[in-house]
Length: 291
Ligand code: SME
Image 1 (tube, rainbow, N blue to C red):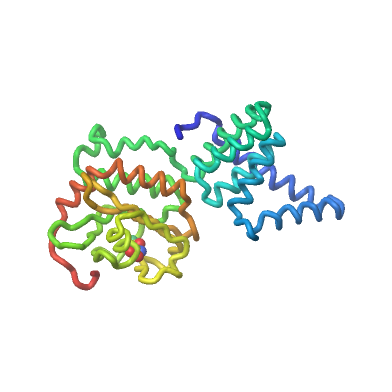
Image 2 (spheres, rainbow, N blue to C red; image 1 turned 90 degrees about the vertical axis):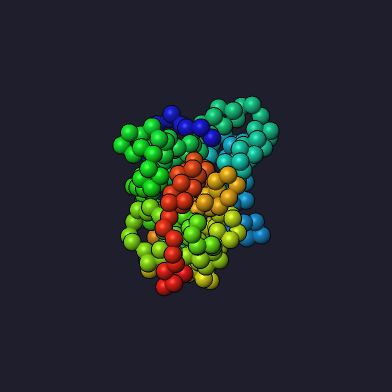
């Protein structure tokens, strides 16, 4: 999805106004209203249908009944469940089919709201303009380490949930070893990781992104800091070969959604040349302590 030129504060305003008005409603409402509202909350909990499916049902019902407040609310809930844009768009298709073309103005607003939510959540545009990656930035030039450092700093500063952002580079001098490259956040003792070890090593062996919602439940997890709750590791490929990884730790549980994964995989793709160059410059030798 492309960038959104809509006022980015409107969804946030909606969400905070809704919360405040809900509080006033619950303070003043009679028993019937209170019971209906509490039934509404419990109805969306997991049962035979999981929470994500229920939110999508809520979204379709709200769209076909043309309630913009309910639509925005369910879009926000869908985003917290990590539902991807593809599913939201299919749900909108059903709503339009059922509700008819009179729902189209609501679909238009819903798409705008969805983009706002995604961009607000990531804190960076989904189609990132990361000039720091390109050689055109005179301050950074062609130095691949500097360019990767700039990417780490940008992600770390822009997204509060990204508490540690770093690259691991495949060491050409030591087979099956990842070496710590540029990073932003606290220093880590895991400066060399063997393929297969920890989340990083597993992602390298599998060659696929690994998202861990709760690191305490992950066997083999290599802890960098006791405050970390969740992690995502995105392999970076260059010319079909693994060149390194983008690793992000968060102190927030389940911090990484399906949209974050898509976004970070895009970043990994854009950075692949710099990662390969930086990896080829990696010094050899294994520090056994950290392998
Ligand atoms: N947690 C990682 C180690 C790297 S740190 O997160 C920076 C792992 O289990 O591989």
